[in-house]
Image 1 (spheres, rainbow, N blue to C red):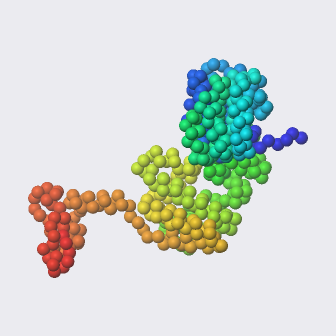
Image 2 (cartoon, rainbow, N blue to C red):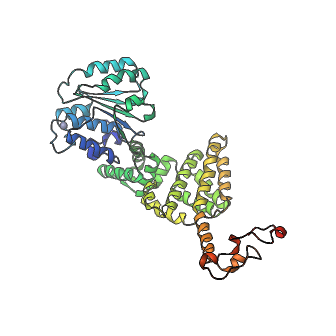
Image 3 (tube, rainbow, N blue to C red):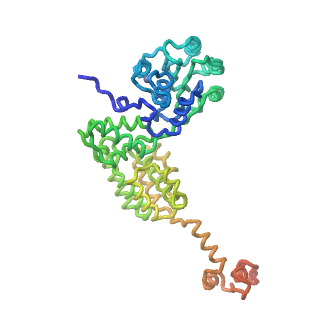
Length: 430
Ligand SMILES: [Zn+2]
């Protein structure tokens, strides 16, 4: 029986074209390889599971590939060099784990080795993963080599915590920021893999897995592995819910509708349905924050359609969010988010997080109706331009009257022009 290879390893991209969601990095690297203008040191930054190490290996393969045509930056994956790098036994490409090679001695060894020309390839390439873990002295020991490296040397550093990499190292490297992968990119990547595996999955189920992965493709594939084992050849939302312990997205919509309608009983009923399904209160709070964040972005997308790109959701949910966003003002949504955010720490700290969350939801239900400020300003403007009837203006003060002639400005209610003559008696300043 052959050993089972997890999806994340089985479908690890082997060429630039297979990398998901990092087009800005891939285009630049491909152009550098094709034009021969390849920097001597790279720093790949980004959260876990977005393809930093994978791209580092592809770049190493591409630089040392002997079967690659001149007009294609993708490695051939079949020449001896590509096979050696893929198998992890290349003498010219060394992959080092920064977390376990933190000392100055480790870096001295690299400094010594890098002086000698490559054995059978174009370049000697050092890949250091989690480079922020190496000690400050080790970083200092690396400086001289990075400053004046031999012509055959290339360094590729990867880190999830770029702020811990000293500025002296940063400035000697070409830096690439890897993005968190969008829900739609993760969904399409997973769909491609499932087709190759001959497994059916509903788009709702993939949406749910992608959201749970929070921008990390590797996390998404690890979850998918777990769900494939459970689902027996077919994946639907209920499989994902039972494995991840997350409720249906409908629950978020129902809860948000109840909150917007100021209906605490309906909100509490939905909340309890969620917990009956085994949702963790802390996780639910985080997921509700993300849901509200998406709702706020959708509400603001009426003014700027580019914002819709930032909404972290699949196309199925987007329409529902648009409909929900029309039911209340943006100020109200911001206020709800603010209440939830302030309560988040309390829910985490509480010995009984479920009750803390219940009270937060009740508080959100009882939040006052806030009016969109832009609407208020529009009304004031129309009032000033005299488009609002005099009766409305007069309601401000019994003595407000309009002057004759002089256009819109002269027709403005007197309330904007002079103090009330009767202010000493009634205290109202016009
Ligand atoms: Zn090759």
